Length: 210
Image (cartoon, rainbow, N blue to C red; front, side, top):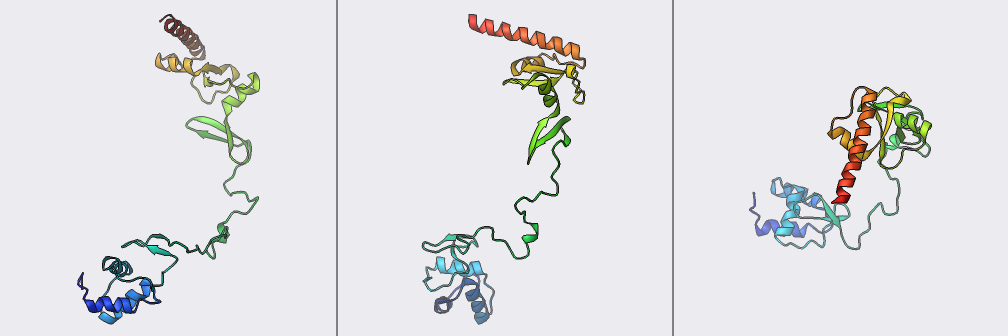
């Protein structure tokens, strides 16, 4: 019966559509004519053949698009969960978080983790983290100025000694990376910072002079 629906078939659908859903109607149609049309196919017949649909009882509370199980709310209809908050499927309450509940994978403040070689420390709840080398620097010298970063002078991300933590501006860091002025020896890197600073001043003066 592929795409061969006679007037008899169409009349049957219209006649028995009153008060039935597409699901019920397709089952009735299959039983009557010994065929197998899907729910979406039954719905498509009504749309393509322009059959009256006013008497059809919707499967839920929306009017589906032709050939699709998805749809939209009909004008004037009210969603069944309107005004209801936190509704869940029966039996799924077990996995819900309650107010004040602490996730099983939560860690204590002070916990250290290593991400891309850098050590981060949890400094507050629920998810406040900070780089350990920055914390050590700020404890000694105060907050890192805006536009600046703290780097490891010897490139060893586990060496948290204060004399290995070097404050550089982002402009200086860009030049140091470009000119390869960051070394495995902290004294050479500090010299590289000085060179980068001089180059920055020279660039600014050159730009000013035009």
